[in-house]
Length: 165
Image 1 (cartoon, rainbow, N blue to C red):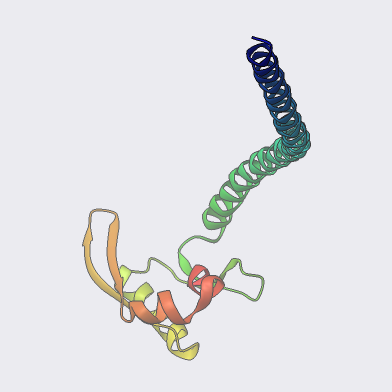
Image 2: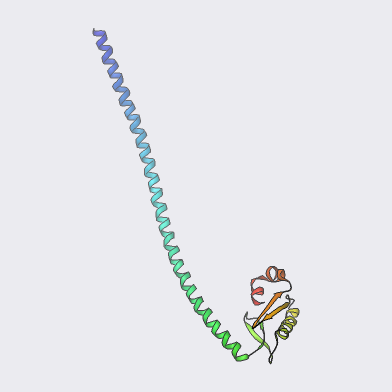
């Protein structure tokens, strides 16, 4: 009986040792996972701080863009009024873009027809090697035209050249 008792005590001692060992290994594993989680949390907090800062900058830039947009709308309205007054003052004439990227009256004409205006414009376009205008038809107060070389206008003149045209 003594041997059995020692065997049972030894078995229980081994089980306790294994369990304590397992608990220590489990605790070590949990401690490692906890440390990794803390590091991940710190990275997330830092990322969150960066995102908040970027969000603040984006909001600030958006406000600037809105302000600029409103100013451009006002400027556009002023330019429309100015150009309308200018056209009214000069009367019918051929307008052509100047080196200031703004149209200026090039030649005043008394009661010109659409065909005469197109003819005068095409003379200017030939000089600047720009595509000519083709008058298709006139309906009431609207002249319908097309450009002789659309590719030249859209592909080879650049943005300011096409805008000037």
